[in-house]
Length: 393
Ligand code: RM4
Ligand code: MN
Image (tube, rainbow, N blue to C red; front, side, top):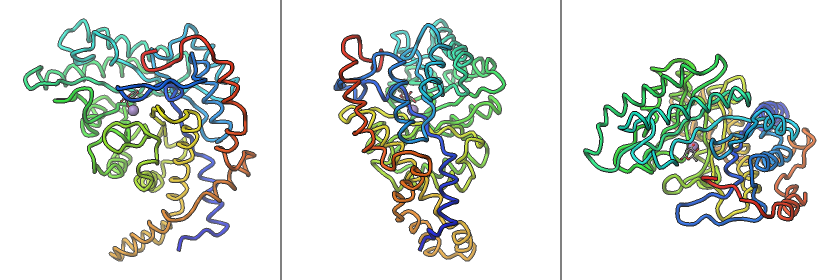
């Protein structure tokens, strides 16, 4: 059985105190599938209101102190003012996400477009995002490219890799000393025949060529079914090229559902590799971000639930008896090693997390605390009129 004696509990709680989970500004806005986005009441109308919602998630969970921005969705005149507002609310601005996938010019690609003028426009946007990072104090530029082709012969696959490398190089060279370029991959969609950054190997190869400030982002929804994501985590961590996660759940493709909803066991296995690689604390430099859409469920509670799901998987991973696991592995004890992992996974960590929250002066049940807080009733009453934020806002 897994030990849950006092020293173990203290060790696990101590590690959990260092965990940070970043929430995405766009998850507070209206978003969802390409068929219908169901508008909800009380949804933010601007980046300030998104930050206010993110601050509520942080106040209730204690582990979500930063919020990622998406440009141009979160474009404002004065980023220093936005950063000040965030600080007043008790949070900070996190990763800046570039968006080169929603302009008509990008029909045939952004940085890999056959037209040099379009490529220039896309690169200029990436550089603008670094300018914004200078003003927000953000460390990370997160890049996801929808670039690809739909038909065999449509464009030169190899030339597109050259164009991608050129764009990444120019962007990388613009980074400050403490800034990073995080490159995200996705198997397919919106392109269906080739995608220019389809997998971790492609992202890794580009990051390697760029240098130490370039690292890979693993979006947990961006793989073929059955892909062993924890293997990718272990591999990239070992070589110092894992920069961040975009957490979410998928049943089919890039579903963007709540992390830990579809496959909590997979999330545990991922967090086990993080703990194994000593990469949980902020000093390890891994950004644990959510990238989700909440189309039919209320958004703020969904994000709280997601944060709690990550915490639960992490607590279970921290409960793995590392010494017993290593001994079983050395002895070639297949079933024993597996049992060590499963014992930790089957432990109900909710009481331990409630205890941790009490230690931190938080309500032990953040979901219930939110429901009681009256926050939703307030934003529903206050946020009338104006244009609700959403994808393309
Ligand atoms: C993409 C990718 C990016 C996210 C956008 C909204 O599929 O996951 O990380 O910024 O969606
Ligand atoms: Mn993502």
